[in-house]
Image (cartoon, rainbow, N blue to C red; front, side, top):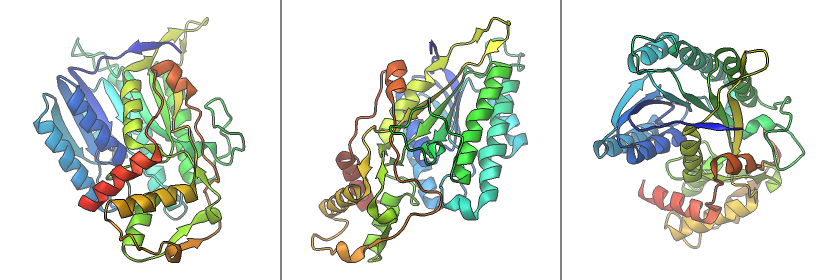
Length: 363
């Protein structure tokens, strides 16, 4: 699909979910790379996991902002609050929107469905409506509305697909968790709004993102906390899982490039817009056996001094069955991302887990 270059410098960029794991790293990258403009951070700082970690990331953002020529503004609120979302768009007039705010986690969605509906469906709808209405904010002749909406989808949309690697050309009509269903719904809503209102939008299916200051509910982080506390870690499906782990810097590089290339607006033979819409995988493209990943994590925790060299790992492992909503394999076909944006993730699990272990030791 042909792309239109989107200049980021001297623009206003809205990043929702910005004190989150990916969001914080992206905002810091933008503050470092851009020569001017404004970045609006937007998040409700909920307690899905320890808010202190979000405050820590927000502190890193503010440190980066002090050294940057880019203005940074943080808005505390939920994207499910339509009035606040509309007010933010009307006041700041973002040219690029990166929607990373979402309730994450497959297992959490089984017991807490309400928050997924509020954030992932109602919240995303509010973002789409605000993007649509941005084109009618005509009092400023220099503001053309949202030039590109980039939003987080997930590898979870592939559900129990047996064909690997997972391609964006595959059918994804059979989600196995509410979380996955909400992410597939985001893609469908974005397609409809792109078609109806000519909003250039790009969805990114992230594959098992990890790294320093990551989400404590992710396995590598929660396993580290349990091992440090002398507790037992549960290894699901008896270790017979493969995951396409993707280091956070690779994810941010992909998002940064995608932001600058929006799907081109075109009309079809009927004179109506062809939807300027695209979806890409961002994954390492190298599925790792879960047991190998755990062994590498343990080695790096010892190397960093988080755990002693004589730690009895075997005594702290428990092999258990598959959890509801989980899938045995994730494997990204990222060929389209490489073709259209010249990028494929490159950081392997040894390097990535080493950086996490060193960060954890200091944190």
